[in-house]
Length: 130
Image (tube, rainbow, N blue to C red):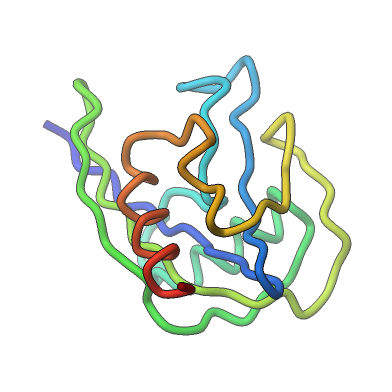
């Protein structure tokens, strides 16, 4: 089974965190997730995150400490998802791949239909920001 390495950004502003929803044409459409994407070639996890957040959300970030790492089997592929805390340094969010984004209270994370690999990350974020 193919293992896909993915980086995700946990972008926090005060008591809120940014989540994005997968568009109708995407795999797992309608699922909420922490934004990010597949690591390409010899990119580091951090380089991937900088590129993906610029491409998908038109923002620049500082990648801070690692939040969590999750491996989840989605049937035909296995995702190895590494999440990092990030801070926006430049840009206004505009979505290109997702159909929605929301700033939500950290404690409300589990009230959204998060993709399975994102749920353990959400729990870790809630624990870190009690």
